[in-house]
Length: 182
Length: 245
Image (cartoon, rainbow over all chains, first blue to last red; front, side, top):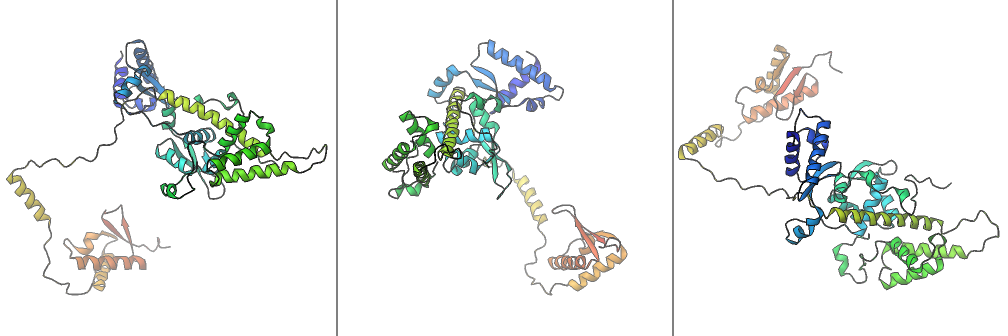
């Protein structure tokens, strides 16, 4: 295996979160992004074809070693790792709205859900799944929320493009900026 | 979600069943699915009655979000009963806004299913264990011999300024004196430092006097005081008439 791939393997092993190509480039000033991508592909293939309990996964705009699915239950049973807490339906609703409408304010989330979502947004923000990305126009310049890399990570997504497209759903959503009738 | 402070649990009649429905729209969708009716042609009277029955049964009839929806449903029901002229193209379906919201919410629910499935699938794979930041370690035990200790003590003692415990400040601040000194310096040099004003080992009274004089002169515009950053040496510069604004 090429030395850069081994260096990247070590860095990914040491990290508790996915590392992006940009971050991995800093490991070796001589190596460019292309070389890092090549080494990542080599590593991924090595772990995919070899007999390994972990695999290299592209996730949250970065790369991370994850245990293979078949071992989750045994590891869980032995309590060697903490499974992430499940998200409540209210949290998922709020996440869905923020993911598709970002940047979006609390009022719009409340309106779509039909309930006050302040506490849910607060919790999601504490868990690092959403964050304030900007302030909106208009009265009080409301805080607008967007999703974080952590959001992608807990869903196992590479990026937001992997979310289902709205026209693939059985019901079409109104466009993001609704023109008020009349 | 209607968030309740824990206190509210104790007050009778204000316990909202949060698990069952995540809001009035969720409950409405549930009723629509149960009745197998067309969402775009909502039998509003029937749905409104069922909604009211369910919220009173579940004790949700005190939660504002559900009450608001109940009121909305009843208003739409009433509007539907109003007579309208035949062939009236202007007629706007009073249900339209509610239907739009329901469809939108239904789509969100569909996304929730998708997100939930994605999260569950992701949870089958574990990343490297996350350990929170360890608490600050207690200081390591000192390994030191007597000579080191004595030397350290001497160094610390040397740093202590001469104590002036016996002396009460004998005179008030001498701001005039300090002002004269600074003005003399100003006449002599265009720029100088704080050390030039107060000398090497100023007493607190001297330092205070000089500082007040400095501020006063700066206010009058006779000089300019500058400091690179916090705790950096103070630089004093004669205020040249050209720079005065």
